[in-house]
Amino acid sequence: MGFLDAVGKMIKTASSISPAGSSSLRSAAENSDLNCPGVYKVLYSGQLMKVGKAEDGLRKRFSDYYRGKAGGTAYLKYIDESNRDRVSVQWRKCERNQCRELETRMYDAAMAAGEKLPWSNRR
Image (cartoon, rainbow, N blue to C red; front, side, top):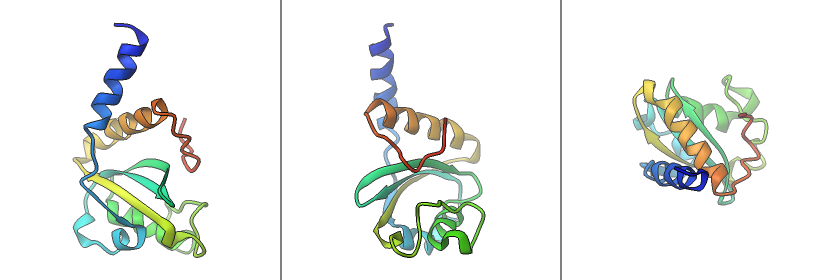
């Protein structure tokens, strides 16, 4: 299998990881149905900015992001009170032991598609 075949297969596989939900960051931070592990995408004004995993719970992660430096340990330095209401998220619930693999597949697919992911500190 050539390099382009491998990339095509990776994109096809990762695209099967479609989001199971999406909303504003604020709504997701308040959603008690998200007290579970999962993977997610962060979008700002419709542009993909980051992919990530939340092994300790999607709601906790989204709440930390929404509150910024004032709350939690997982804040993103790019999100603050001036822009947090233009941030949206997409997520997929999964088992804790699947989070890392699914996040890697989503990240690799986004990079292969030419996304820049400016809020991602990964790799």
